[in-house]
Amino acid sequence: MSIGTIYKLRYVSITASVLTVTDNLQAEDLDVQLRTLTQEPPLSLNGGEPTFSYPLSSWAYHEKLRQLRMIIQLGFELSIYSPEELPGMYWYLSHLCSTHLGHIDRIRTFTIAASRRNVSPASFPGKKENAAAERKRAFEKTLKLLDRHTTTVLAIDAFALALHALYVLLARHNLLPTATSSQAYSSARLRYELRMKPFIPITLPQLVPFEDYQREAILEGDSDAAVLDRATRAIAEARRAWESVLANGAFLPSFDKEQESKATATATATAIEDEWRRDVKDTLRACIGTSIAIGTVKKALAERSSSKKDSQGSPLNLTVEIPEVGSKNRWHDWWVVPCVLEKKAAPKK
Image (cartoon, rainbow, N blue to C red):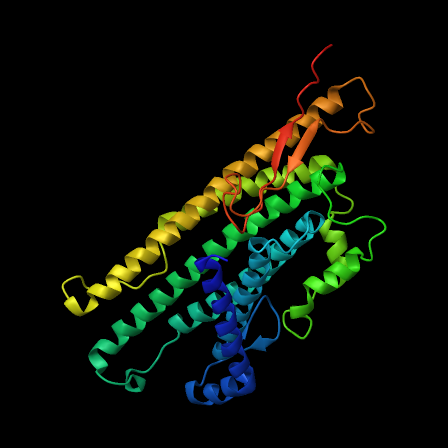
């Protein structure tokens, strides 16, 4: 197990402890008590019932969604999922990202509303003359941070959608290697219950019922052309989003280089940023590999449809290999990009 994997596992464990403490303190009750001090007015979202921001509960839910996403992604890194589970697990990763994006939008809406609210200078602690400017900077920093979170989650969501659609096509045409047989003491439902076991006790977000998961995992009712278009658009969006993530830089504090006491912290931050940049660039390489795989499948489908043979019954002239973690064809541990190649023609005798 790599040092990076150990760090991620520790992050999941620490975050779980934080969330447990928050739940024990009943975050929503604390938010109600906090609201009596801030005198926050309610806000109607999308024409619904008036509601409040619940800042502590919102932070806890934000961290919970990050943890759930990390658990799913670590499953790819640790090679827990069998090849036939990859379409569904990438769909579930996208589902978590969509939920997270909606939650960040909610936080942003309340943050913007709070920034526009008139606040009496007498309510500012400390120096009154600088309080308004500090308040404005704090809101700008918060909104910038929310935008950074949005860009990152959008990038993960788009890449997960692209791989989900690609794996759906490969599974439909019996190109994926399988780890189970018809005689195995297992089923798709049992495997789903096993993978989702850590999520069963969680009430929010609710666990997706197996029937809904199965329908979405195989993109039931969508034609090959629709799934292929979905994959093509998603991977293009993923590449743009990850390029934006790379351009924004890592989530690191800025230090004053003239302060010698900050020298060690600055060196550590630089090392972390180098590792982060390497990780994002590996993700971009995986995006390129996915684009190539999608293009290969698209070409094979076009050749079969233009062939005079039975286009519906004939198999695609492709071979698929799932790269293992650590192999040269596995550009990133979290993004299992299949190696899709055309079958070589048999030599004539």
